[in-house]
Image (cartoon, rainbow, N blue to C red; front, side, top):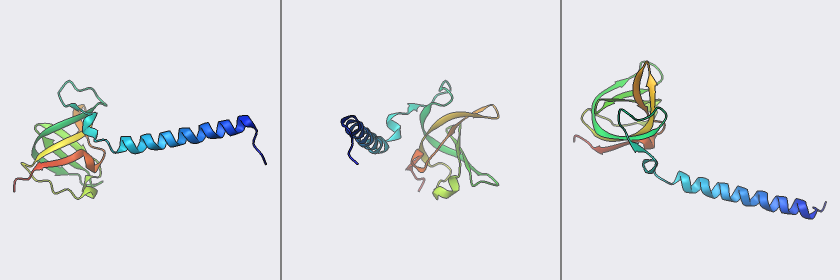
Length: 125
């Protein structure tokens, strides 16, 4: 079966779009999230991507779900399924957190959506 001229043009355009999207995906996934994040403040809007640097004041693990809740510089940080990340977090570690601002029971928190959103800057040794 031979394609008409319009069909050939449509297929070429379709393949070009697929190649462009694939290339964009690879480029964007290689960019550090920190490039897009704003420094966290009490005025940070819900849903915005933020970055927070500070010391860990406390670490809690939920009874179910394998979640971790941190207090970093007085800000609550929720790491869903954080136990799977095999993090060696300790109190007083200096960390960089990248996540999205959300509310839980009326309290502001940063929700980390991947292992890349947690960086230990300085272990207490």
